Image 1: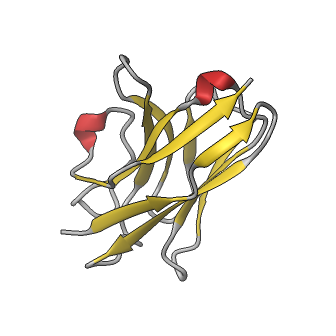
Image 2: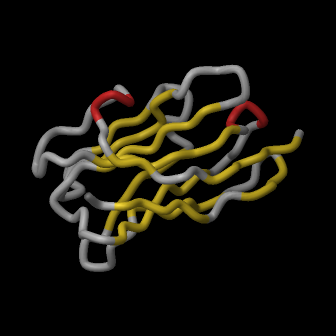
Length: 126
């Protein structure tokens, strides 16, 4: 089973940018969809963005459309989440996730994913 690891989180001022990376170890995830979720204290884990196995299809939560971009380069492994114009309400632990079923369409629900990273903290100050 593929193991995922996120990196790139940190503290940034409102309006700033961060790029998160999700890398796979133990196996490649070039044939699997990948999604980013986030979870703020006291809140449920919520969908942020997803990308199909070949990068040809992406989806975003309404709250991040126009500000976040998910992309992948399967030749280089990581899946990235570029986050621009960050807001304090973007503060959360961000997780990447993938499935064990190749070539399937990405899901918006956490239950659609079988492998998760440990998460990376993103804090946006006002």
